[in-house]
Image (cartoon, rainbow, N blue to C red; front, top):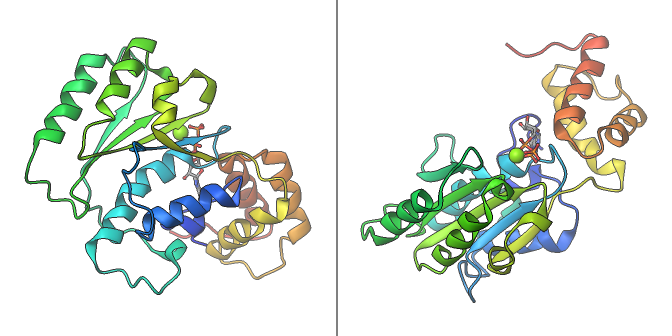
Length: 238
Ligand SMILES: Nc1ncnc2c1ncn2[C@@H]1O[C@H](COP(=O)(O)OP(=O)(O)OP(=O)(O)O)[C@@H](O)[C@H]1O
Ligand SMILES: [Mg+2]
């Protein structure tokens, strides 16, 4: 667990093991992607659960997976992204009148490039908060998802506002609050270690209470763990 700087799949918390397992199959190159008409990964769930962070990391992890440098006998959840970014992900921050011709043109242009230098030989497109696209823009985006050399990553808080055609072309990964507060302990403990604190100074029971109150938001959880640590003499590393 890498505290405030997640850089592998095991640093994230998933609502169910099947969704996490699916990402492991893709990163382990056991499940081809894109394949069978599924060219997107759609991360959905409540606020602050790490969707945008993971969506940005996934292309980096895929590049590591395809680079041939990763030893496939190791746990794929521990596969780390390279320290310096080596992907050219096209990021669309949705909303603010982002129009469908702009999206279509960018995707089609990328898809037409023959010399893709990514190890995966695909272009990466990230649509953060895709629910904020208009219905028309979502419908145009849906048809570009059938282009051959593209991988799509989406995040949303509102799965019910996403075009059914987009949803149907995606693997869905749920990121909501995890029922068991114990799931948040390794992250909390890791943050406290980063603050230079000995184990148990902030108790696991306290961390569990903070996890319940955060309702899945790592913004809130990370912040309250840091505050609890600082109150007990912890220090933010310089
Ligand atoms: N796995 C993680 N470990 C530690 N901190 C994390 C992790 N994932 C996200 N964070 C931190 O939690 C905060 C929220 O993450 P992020 O913005 O990715 O959430 P989100 O699900 O996209 O939120 P929203 O639904 O509001 O868009 C960020 O400050 C991020 O650095
Ligand atoms: Mg987000």
